[in-house]
Image: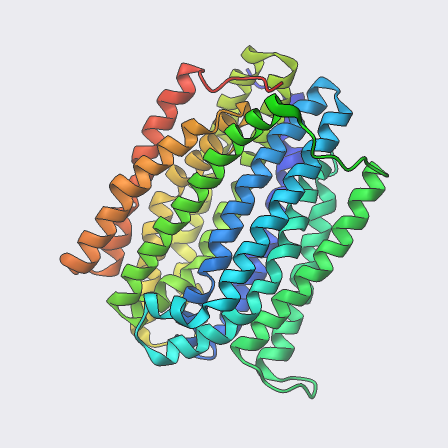
Length: 441
């Protein structure tokens, strides 16, 4: 039976988050098309040089997920002091991780690029981008963490406004700096990196102002006590390790694509913004699941949490089917917007078709694993599920089909993506067992 009040709660969180994610992806798509005018080597260079940011963003997302679990459950319990402590400790961890990634990106750009490709043109382009993009890590991290309590406190539209403004600034600066408009020197791929740095700095300033407007002065404390730290790191370590190892697995896939050829790598790269746009459109449901189900668990209402979780999955599945059908019809106009060889257009269109087929499975995994099961704080379950899919199925299949059998990239991508199906099957069994339901202290 449908619950209208629950649907309103979901939409209040899901729509702003989805719009923010879609806006970011749509502007990323514009950015990608702009860089795409520079040729295949620039596209491939950004694909590889963007991997540290890709890995960092998922590790950051893991920390934000833990922050969301803690903040939402403490709100459900009415424990303001613990809520503030959870914001402080997750912010501190984010800054530490950001500094580590910044040091790695800045100090080993050339060596990193050469792991993935031997094409000197791609390496040179990627180095220019990687040396600068590391400056986005700290502001990106702080913005992401501060947005969590803002959403949990019912102000999901605020981060949306920040995301929109940041994306507009980033796109405008890309136009000016990549191509050299309005009297500026054309910087190419370097201009794209500078635009990202400026837009992220703007985001963190505005988000900080919004946070303190909502919360006022908060007590800075990371003192959780021995038991509190044990519980925190029991949640944090599995989910961060999980996201880190998952993204390393995805980077191995890029390694395979890069050694299949620059055209294949460029084709895979140009599909990225579309994938981000589609997944982003339904990411709000996953975030809503984490927040709302977390509050239900904090209130001790397990039956309601379970029933509402099922509805979350239904919403996500129906939405993913609609978007997949839309992508099937629009994939050709999209790939033709890039100034690349016809072969790259063809490969890109086929990759998008494969992605459309896989989207419902990916979305259900995102909602179940990224939102519902994690909301109870027992993140080790998700780590086991993801590691099984990535390292026992996805990575071996990528290496075997791409480097040994040397299959076309579309088949390599589709076959290795069967890890998603395995993860979904295990997640469904885990969900039905209800072992994920837990209230943190």
